[in-house]
Every structure is written in structure tokens, then in C-alpha cells.
Image (cartoon, rainbow, N blue to C red; front, side, top):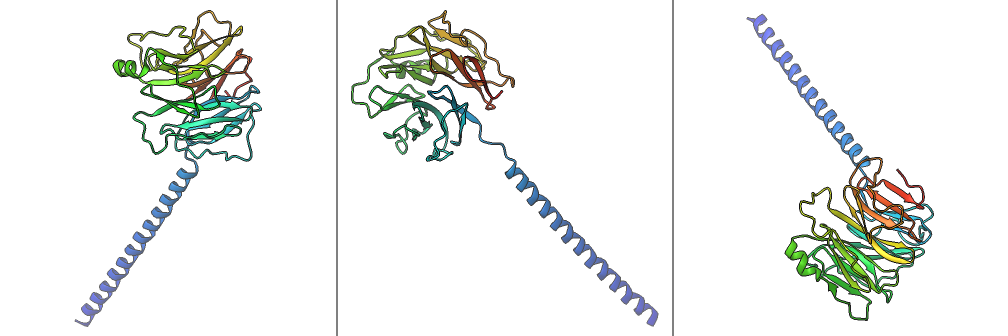
Length: 306
């Protein structure tokens, strides 16, 4: 009987030891898994991809700036980087920018917030006004101010005294009728007129900016062929515009331009869809930006980063 009690006692001790051992093992595994999870989160945060580059702005010295969606500024090929300004603009989502001076540009967010970088003076914006459609571009005006262009074709003036000229045709009604959206705008260098283009390639002209043609609502235009940007074209002292398709096709108006980057299919090494374009001073060079942040150069444009 004594032997039986001793055996039972030993069994209980053994089971207790095993139970303690299992709990220790479980806690150890849990601790290891926690450390591993924390490490993976840390690696994910430190190696998360940078915000995509979405905006390309040419400077007066033939360099250019690249702006990411979260407002980071990269100066390339001699474009000035103003050390008195932050290298990250205080805008939530940069959707467009326009050069103003040798060392500056205006950047705008989809909600209409504007930031003047370098020598570009701030004249106000739409932040807090809740525009009915996202802002897609900013265009300099003759008086030194600027205009914001909404996806619905509406135009908002800042520091502009003269009455805005009417467009031909009216973009707000036409865009609503066509169920399209404005995607870009570009102005004459003296600010006396500007053009707006929608994603289907229809162009609207204001002021002294003459309507030189467009794609005329091409039927069956696929999402890969739709227009994503518009650039100013200077050829032999005359000004026109070119439309950039997402697939890299460039449509020049008027046609027959001698500018080397027009009337062709633009290719970048990544093969990714294009999102923006810019022409350089003098009009004989073009830069094209794809959605991966790679820039392709044509004509007299400086060597790009592809």
C-alpha cells in the first residue's frame, strides 16, 4: 500500500513537471512569435515603397522637378532646390504643379490646397471649401495669379482682376453631358489664354488660346488610351498643344510640328503607363513620366533617369 501511494505521488509530481514544462514551452513559443511579428512589422515599415511620383515640372534652366503624391520634391538636371523651403510640401496629395519663376512653382492638391515653392507667391486656395469635383491642374495667369481647374471643368481664379474669358465650348456643361472629366490644362506663356482637355481628348479654349483641334470624343477609346496630360508646344514662334495618352501616344495640335517628341509613341524602359509630360524652354525637348517614377527624354531634353 505504501508503495502504491509513493508511486501515485511520483506520478503526480511527474505530471506537474510535464504541465509546467508545457506551459513554459507555450510561453516561449508565444514570445518568439511576438518578436518575429514585431520584426516583420518593423521591416515592412522601414522598407515600405515610397509614395509614387505623380507630377513633372520643368524649370526655366531645362532642369525639372519631380513631385510625389505626398509632396516630396526632387530636383533633377540642375533645377534649383530652394533650401529655405521644405523638401516635402505640406499638401496631402499633390496632383499637379506649374512653374512660375526660375526657382519656383505652384503645387496643388485634389482638394484645392496650393503651395508656392521657391519664387512662386501664394495667393490662396480652396482648402476647406469642398469643391464639387477634385482639382486636377493649376494654370498661371497674366496678372501673376493662377487658376485651379476642377475635374468637372470649373475654373477658380486667384489674384486675377480681369474677367475670365469664356471657353469654347463651355466645359462644365459639355463634360457633364459626355460623362467625362477634365484631366489637365495649360496656358500661354503670357497668361492671356489657356486650354483644358478632358480624358476623352476634347479641348476647351479660353481667351487668346485658339482651339487648334482635338480628338473629338473618339468612340471606343479604351482606358489605356485615354488622355492623361496636356503640354504646351512652341514651334517657330507659334504656340499649340499636345495631348498625352496613357499608352504613350502623343497627339500634336496643330499637326506637322517639328518638335521631335511629338507625333510619336513614347516609350519608357519600364513599359508602365504614362502619367505626365513637360516641355522645356525653347520647345525642342520633352520629358515624359511613367507611373513608376521613370522619366524619358526626347529632343533637347537632358538625359533622364530611365
